[in-house]
Each structure stands twice: as structure tokens, then as C-alpha cells.
Image (spheres, rainbow, N blue to C red):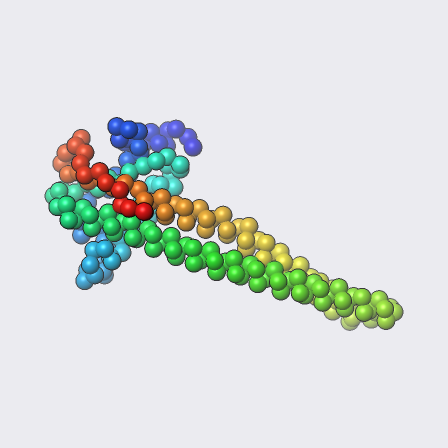
Length: 202
């Protein structure tokens, strides 16, 4: 990871990267359509979730804290609600990604089994044609077609696994890292003060 990327961010006294989020009010962190839900059940604003994800993706393996800055400093109750919201939202995103990965693995396994079965049938058919003597043109096309279908299915299974599995695994780890990150708060009018450092929970 190029050092200059991490240098773009502020750091805490003990060297943690600070991912800053500035907003006027706590309510600005949440989706508008979710107004009636309790804060711990609200979805985070889509732009905020994307911003946090991309920042953490950018800083790589560096340890970090999320620092919220509001014009009006929130009460301890609201601070705890925000911590809970961030934690639960990204744990939920992690669970969704786990579900998507498991579905992908089932699809790849199914394609692989189908491919192996068809490949076995094609070998059996080819053996029958050899035993019966010189196969006809149609028989040859049929046998070759089975072989091609088998290898396409096997290749599709391998490609699905090799291309998608690493990305799913990366996002699962990324969402967990954000969910478990410490969360700080400070008034935006005082950029040098630092208060209320606490983890979201695991």
C-alpha cells in the first residue's frame, strides 16, 4: 500500500487512521424512507455506507477509527445509537455477502457435478461406439457434443469459483472490519478536540 494514501488521512495520537464523517445532525446519517424505524434498525444513508466502504478499502490493512463530526454535539444516548447502527448495518451487509458467497458456491458445485456426470456419459457413449465399430457421423457429433457440454460446465464451475470467491471473501472481511471499528465523536466547530472514543462491539 503506498504510504501517501494513508498520509491523506488524519491520525490519532496512537497512529490509527481517522475516517472522518461530517454531518449537521445525527438524522442525516440515515435513509429518509426509514424515518419511522428505531435508530438501531435504520439503514445508513447509501452515500455514507459507500464512503465508509471505499475509505476502508483505500487504506488497506491499516487500523482505523471512524470519527463523526456534528454541528451540535450529540448526547451520549445518540452516540451509542450511532455506534450500534454502524455495527449492525455492516454486520448485516456481511451476512448478505456470506449468503451471496454460499449461493455462488452451491452454483459452482452444481455445475461441476453436472459437468462430471455428462463427461462420464460422453466417455461411456464413445466406448459404445468403439465397440460397435466405426461410428456414424451423427453418432460422432453426438459424442463430441456431450464432451464439449461437459467441459463447458466444468469450466463454468471453476470460473465462477475462482473469479467470484476472492471478491466475496474480501467484502466479508471488509464489512466485519468496519462493523468492529472504534467510533469517535467531536463537534465540527472544534476540529482539534477528541471525545467519546469507544468501540462499536463485536
